[in-house]
Image: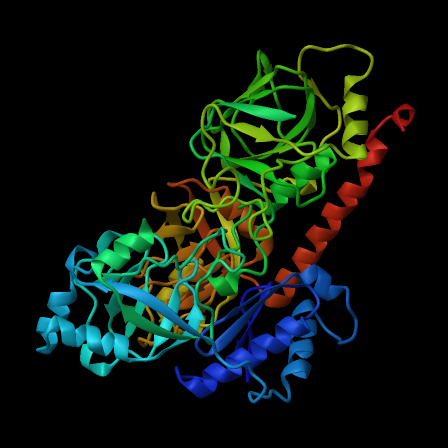
Length: 232
Length: 338
């Protein structure tokens, strides 16, 4: 476990050096600890693949005197104390979230390219994509965007040479070893293989993001008729 | 009590101190770009430090106040006026019912904060009233102001009412009344078109090659036209790393200086993404973020290193001064209004 300053108002805690389940569980366990018992001046927490950023207000941190030193040392010493006996065995059981996807056609214009590149049929790509279980390693990049691990090697596909300027919300893509769903309209360089009628990010919900860090995700193929009905 | 938006200006949004506790969902921190100016504005009108204000960018809006209102303009000087009266920044001002606040040229800085007694009372979305334009939520329907909008105001605090009473005096004025007191000089940052910005070393500063390290803290960078509330792109000497390094996306901060492969640094600002995967070559000291926020495309900046300890010490000093200024407000008011 390594602590470092991220400027004068944040600490970055590094818990590993590669994207793997063990590090992921440490990140989740540490995040839970910090949320349950936050350091003085706590503002926000951002878990990622191998690290956690804790944003804090140095003024509030300076006003507590349990530890000696500057606001940064106050926060780091507090966190070190809390994380010393980190236990990954008491994590909540992961949820599994199913995301319906209409593959191919105008909703997934790159599906055939992806299939051709790997010498597969479009149906085989869909079968591989829906057959895997994915782990939400982290949420970042834009509201509700989940970084998923677990894409079958057979359909890993390099990003497109020319990114699109506007990928519609709900579009499912493959970029390198990763797959994911664009929560909002955004520019994007991934290969677009389908679209979900589900709202990945919706401010009207109490929990605005469809998936959270630590969730398992499965994709389920739906017909165009089901897609149209769901978005109607 | 409402404000009628006559024209929206270039990009006027509702901003408070930002959106805490949602970054794990990929929701940015947002909030005012120049938080010192924004909070001084709130102090001058008797609001809490975190009351929602308007952030106007380069071309201000035109706003008609339906009832008497105490306002303060802080940050950039966008040549504000009401009728023939010019409205100075950093002063509380009593606007009579029906007054229309207008702006002219951007004389200095980039963003003006319009603080109004009672605060802008738009709905709270994920713990904040701040507008996040990209995902279209917060503020007024998630967008910048436009003609015809009505902005709801909160109830003025007892202190706001005292400030209003002190300005109103005995005359039943039908013009803007500017207070004779104002925010102290220490509360007003030295905005300029060419600033020195202090940076703390970042996780990957040591990966810069010698020439690039010298250029990072020795040369002048120009703010590119594609700079916005998300980030400031800097043109100038291209910086490069000694070794390429494969980084995993992780949390970034307001003020993180990223170095994308092209070699032109980006300073991440209020609407930054929650995470990033580019090398972090510096972290702007919080006390200097306002200076950056007030730069316009074409303006210049230079970086200078500061230690983490010194940056936090300066921050504590500024925060102390700000709170002292807030405590001093009642002493500017005549005793008869108590």
